[in-house]
Length: 229
Length: 405
Ligand SMILES: Nc1ncnc2c1ncn2[C@@H]1O[C@H](COP(=O)(O)OP(=O)(O)OP(=O)(O)O)[C@@H](O)[C@H]1O
Ligand SMILES: [Mg+2]
Image (cartoon, rainbow over all chains, first blue to last red):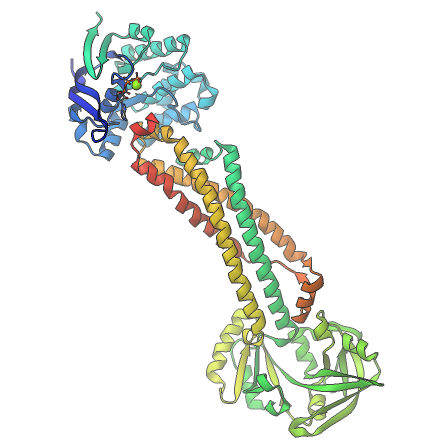
C-alpha cells in the first residue's frame, strides 16, 4: 500500500532558547492511503504537535515529513499554504467555521479559494452536505447549528478541496456521545466509501474503539502502534 | 465572498460596531457642521458685500483707495471705457462718483456718503431698484436723490421732502444744493442703511464740480472664477502707474483674514477630534484582532492566503469607517442643507458684528461638496491607516500559536 504520510525521526523542541520543551522525541510514522487512524496518548504527549507538523502548520526541529513524495519541511511559507489547500483537510477541536457564513458558504469557501467554478462548487457542496447528513441546513449560520452539526460541516469543508487526507485534532472533544457517534459514522463512511484517509487525535475511548489503527504517543514518542484486523 | 465576509463581520459585534460608527459619525458631523457654517457665513458675508455694493472688481485711480478724495478721481474717457469693455468676461462697466457730504433737513444735519450712479447699470449690478421701499427709483437725468431709509428716519424726512447737501467739490470748489427725495431704499445692514444718498451720475458730477469724472468703475463679471480671469487680464493691460485694480479680496481684507483665521482654528479642533476618534477605533481594532486570533489561525490553516485574509480585515475596517462616515455625511448634509435654506437667525452681540460687516444677521450653512468629500477622505485615510495593524499582525501570525491562545 502506498504511503500518504511518512514521518521520519521528527523531533520538536519548543522554546529552544529559554526553557526548552521536548514535545516530540524522534517520531517515525507511516500512514497508508485509506487508513482510519487514531492518535492517542495522555495530555501533553505531543498529539497536537505531531498533527500540526504533519499538516505543515508548524515546523519540525529535526526530521522530515513527506507527503505525496514532497518533503513539506522544505517548502516556503506561501508554498505550504498552497500545498495545504490542495492536499490536506483540517478539522479542529472547535470554532472551525467562519461564523458569518452559512454552512453552505463555509464548505464552498475553500473551493472558492481554489478558484473552482460555481457549478463545480454547487455540485460538490450538495454532495458533501448530503454525505454529512446536513442537506437540510445549508443556509444556517454556525451559531444556528449544534456543536455536532458544526463539526460535520467542518468535515464537509475539510473534504471540499478533495484532499488526500484529513487531519483532525480532537474533533469530538466538545461533543456529546450521540453527536460523537454520528460524526464517527460519517467519517468512517467517507473513509470506506471514498477511501479518504483520516488521522485524528482523541482521548475518547469510544472513538478509539472505532479506529482501525491506534497509534499511542507518550512523552513525545510512539509507544505502541496496533492495527485491528 | 470576501466582500460578503467583511460586510457581515462588521455586524458580529453590533454594539462595538455601533459605538465605533457613532464616534466616526459624530466626528464627521461636528467637522462638517463647523466647516459648513463657517464657510457659509463667510461666503455669504463676502457674496452679499460683493453683490450689495462693491462688486468683484473695481478700477480706481492709484492712491484713491487710501485717501478717498475727489482729487484722486479719474476722467471717464471713451478710451478707458472701451479698454475695459474689451476685456473678455466683462459684461458691463458701472461708473460711480463717491464722496462725503453733510445733509440737512430743518435743524438736523447728518454726514452721508453721496454716490453718483448710472441708475440702470447700478440696478443690473446690485439690484438697487429692488430696494425701493417708498417713492420711485431714479431716472438718468433726475435732479433728485434717493436716500437710505435709516438716514431718512434720522433726519425725519419723507419722500417728496427737499434736503440740502453741503460738501467740498473737485479742486476745492464749494458744493451746496437742494435736492428732492424721490425714493427711500432699504439695506439689511443698519450701517449701510444709514449711510447713502444716491443721485444720477451727471447730477453728482455737477454738484461736485467734477465734470465727466468718476471715483471708481465697478466691473460686472459672472462670479468669482470669471473675476479671477478678468483680474489677471487687466493687470497686464491697464497702466499700473495710473490705475489700481481691486478685486473682492483686496476690497475686504478684514473678512478674508477673519475667514482664514477661523478656518485654521477649525482645523486644529478637527485634528484633535479625529485623534480622539482614531484612538477609539484603534482600541476596537486591537480587541477585534486579539479576539479573532483563533479564527484567523483556522482560516490560514485551511488554505486562505494571508494577503487575502489581511485584505478581508482591511475591507472590514474600511466598511466600518465608511458606515460611520456615510451616516455622518448623510445626516450632516441634510442638516446643513436645511440650514442653508433656513438659516439660523443670530441675535445680540453676534448680530451687531454682522451688522458691522453690512450683513443681515443670518447664519447660513454651506453645502459645498468638497467639505463633505474632505471628511470622507479623512476617514478613509484614517481607517486604512489603522487597518494596517490587524493586517500586519495577520501577515506575521503563526497559525499554530494563534490557535493555542
Ligand atoms: N507553542 C508551544 N510552546 C511551548 N510549549 C508547547 C507549545 N505547544 C505545545 N507545547 C508543549 O509541548 C508538549 C506537547 O503538547 P501537545 O499540545 O502536542 O500535547 P497533546 O498531546 O496535544 O496534549 P492534549 O491532549 O492536552 O491536547 C506539552 O508539554 C506542551 O506544553
Ligand atoms: Mg492537543
